[in-house]
Image (tube, rainbow, N blue to C red; front, side, top):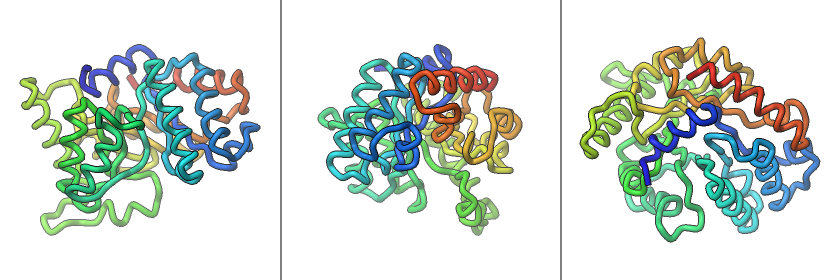
Length: 285
């Protein structure tokens, strides 16, 4: 199987760089006319996929909105992931996992091992035990040709003070993460005998589309795909993504979640919304 970054790049060229979030909250399910249940959560994801005939690059189910239903919710998530991947859609599980040593490895095995029932293509992680604590997670993902997206600059205002705090050497926390992520992608490139060139590596980053310093972050990670939340309900537009991340063309993945229902919750209305957003997202290539 090709590396995650190769698979993703191919899908972007085929469809667009749009990342479609599946966040089946009670309010969103109500807006779609679906029950607030595991079955409703799965049906919402299936409705989105079928609305565009599985013609999207990246589906991002938010694990928490399935986990809230317990084991039945996890089964619904597994079923949605199998449906998407079975039709060639890449799945980025949004779980923001992060821990140390064997625990980090156990998380990774849950998403990338041969025997897992929740095999995905990539996972979001949080690095605030230190990026080095995720090394075992990264190693397992790399061996399985998977990807990892590390939260660097989130779109929520509560994260700014921590992420922009200065370390002893003068770098901000976010800047230090950019440097370490770039180093790991270069190491990956060297390990497969390739120069760190135009193809991004397997370690992507989450950089909010609403962040004023988004351009500096993306410039500091030239070998990373950039997941850009904040488009739609949080106020950013596709034009904002292009304006704030001009050096990330071809690498930036604008994420929409609640905006899926901007024009209504029927399959036809979702299809119209996603066609419009995909057309806008192609301007970022």
